[in-house]
Image 1 (cartoon, rainbow, N blue to C red):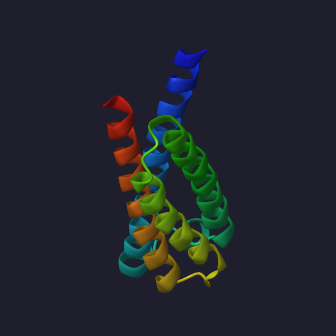
Image 2 (image 1 turned 90 degrees about the horizontal axis):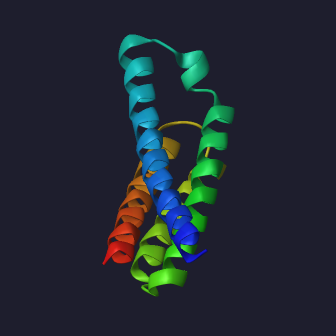
Length: 124
């Protein structure tokens, strides 16, 4: 049972890192494709796509970081991740545009770093 819990917890952190990276790539690629090339605006700039992706990343991040602190007891990843999740949540209520992209990229960067720290603490 303990081994299954560890595997699930590790996967949440790895999925969190992946979602954070995909989110950042989406934001940057959208800005480049739409601003420079004028491509994909209808799909890539769809606010619903962004809201769903951010909500999923926030949920996975909260679960993974919570499981990590329950296991290793170090608050650092939770504090860093909490700051990132806060920025991501703020991006959800900000109008679609450059401010939202900046908040999202800053937030997912912090969350990805927190997931990475979580994985390092769990494997130590």
